[in-house]
Amino acid sequence: STLLDFRDVDLVFPDGTAALDGVDLTVDRGEFVSIVGPSGCGKSTLLRIASGLESASGGAADVSTSRIGYVFQDATLLPWRSVQGNVELLAELNRAAKVDRTAKAAAAIGLVGLNGFEKHLPKQLSGGMKMRVSLARSLTLDPELFLFDEPFGALDEITRERLNDELLRLFTEQRFAGLFVTHSVSEAVYLSTKVVVMSGRPGSIVARFDVPFPMP
Ligand code: ADP
Ligand code: ADP
Image (cartoon, rainbow, N blue to C red):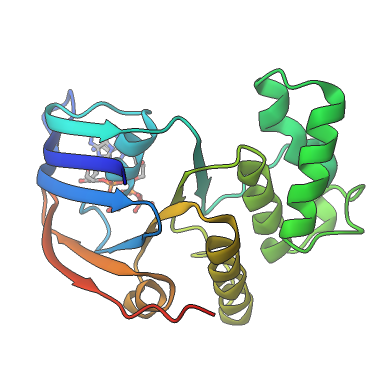
C-alpha cells in the first residue's frame, strides 16, 4: 500500500522562490526510495512537505501515516542528556509513561548497536555514534515512513559505509518505508529499491529507476 503520494506538487515560498514544480512521487510499503540531485534542487523541501513541516502550494501531497521518523545530517542531540535520555525524548514528548519509554529506548539503543553506551553524553561520542543515537530516537516511534535528509553527509567514508550497512539491516528488519536524500548516486543505488533524480530550480524529477534489491 502507498504511504506517501505526491501528485503534481508545487511549492513557491512567500518570497517568490519556486522550489518544486510538478513533482509526482509515491513511496509504498517495502520501498526505500532515494532522491539524488544537486544542491538547491528542492530535496530538503520535499522532505519537509512529507513531514508536514511545510505545505505544498499546489497539487496534492498525501501522507497516510503519522508514524514518521526524520533524521538530518546534524544529529540534533541535547548535549546535557545521556544517550538514554536523548533516545527517550520523542516518547517523552508523546507523553508515554516512564516505564514504556525506558523500555522503548532500551530496545532502540540495542537496534543501533549502542548497548553499553546508555549513560554516555553526546560529547563523549563519535559522529557515527551520534547518528546512531539520532536513528534510535526516531525508531522509538515505530516509524512506518522514515525520512532521511543526507544523514551521513558529514561522516568520514568508512563510518558512512558502516552506517549504510546498519541502515540496510534496519530497513529489512524493521520494515519501515524509506525516503532518503543524498548527493551521492552510489549511496542511493546501494541503499535503495528505487532512485529518483531531481534537477533544476524549481526542482522537478528528471529520471527514475528501480534497483535490483539484494534481500539477505
Ligand atoms: P541544503 O543543501 O543543506 O538544503 P541550502 O543552502 O539549500 O542547504 O538551504 C539551507 C536552509 O536555508 C534551507 O533549509 C532553508 O530553510 C534556508 N534557505 C535557503 N534558501 C533560502 C532563501 N532564499 N530564503 C530563505 N531561507 C532560505
Ligand atoms: P536541496 O535540499 O536540494 O539543497 P532545498 O530544498 O533546501 O534544496 O531548497 C530548494 C530551493 O528553495 C533553493 O533554491 C533554496 O534556496 C530555496 N529555499 C529553501 N527554503 C526556502 C525558504 N524558506 N524561503 C525561500 N526559499 C527557500
